[in-house]
View 1 (cartoon, one colour):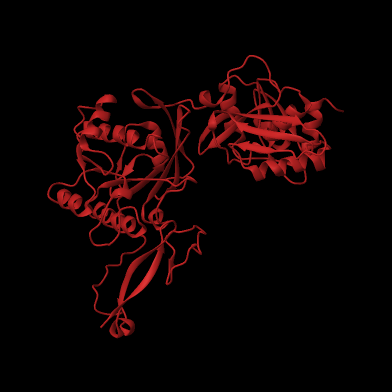
View 2: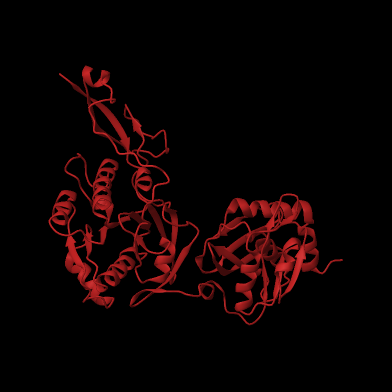
Length: 457
């Protein structure tokens, strides 16, 4: 008799082991290995090959004329910007974010806009009853939108219902971790259930030309819960970022097969739902009339959109023998350590006896290497207690040698700064020509910038 092979699957990363162990060897998580039934192994199955017995697959030439996939603009400009122009028919989109960040609210607003244009839209909720979704829609002023609602968790029931009529143009599943497939054993939310449920829903979307949106839970470190293969199965992965205590939200594309991954959409949470923010720089700039030591404005770039943010630094001198602390919010702590090392080794400044605190105003997160010069400017200003002028911006990449390197799209950054009333710029020497109409100061090395800020030489 054929014997089923035992296997243990990690519920955090999807790693497979043939024996139980307390810690997953792939992701180092504890107590996540769960036994799952494996395939039946028979002598015939082990020896049989897959070179015959199947159906022929039609092969087409790479240069064949094909139609571009149709786009479904949601009517929410910031949402469409992150998607690359709107939903694509037959595509699968995964959107993740912290609880309460506004994922369901944003998708309900998008579904209502599409439904009001006469497109069939289905919203399936596995976490809330249909009445709860209906009450939220009324609170958002969307109560009369012709969106078809259902509260279900069985993938078989959902697909049977959808197959009975014309396919919807948009199908929202909220959330994929609550879906259950009766073809697989296990509770909803396990690796096998998430994988199997997603596969069946994506197959339906591809065959019927429906734009599918899956809402995904996130873990405590911000990554989407479930197997990593889920992100590979979908066409687009969107991350909804922001703090619940802050008003703004950022929709960022992590993966997009039909567009770029460098665009963001900015929203502000209000009583009537998520509103679009056409000028995001206004959210991240602190309104102040006087110059403050340790504050520098940095023109960040998100795709083709420049966003001005304020970088704040604070240094506190400690008594001899105390261990200084380094705290960073909104930036890479390793990058801060590098900038501090360059300032000490190349510029003769001492931060070893001072605590250093760095913050990006508004809860914004920066990964742009052009922020090096702005961070260095804020640190020098805080250490020397010399304020940077309020009408000045700074950007540039700092090398370990102390050289200030040019960055991309200098003209676009300066143009956005000029629109908001900034008149001065601290930038790499090779990019000084881009500062037309502004008082641009170019620096080849970090030492030259420090001398300029401290009035030396």
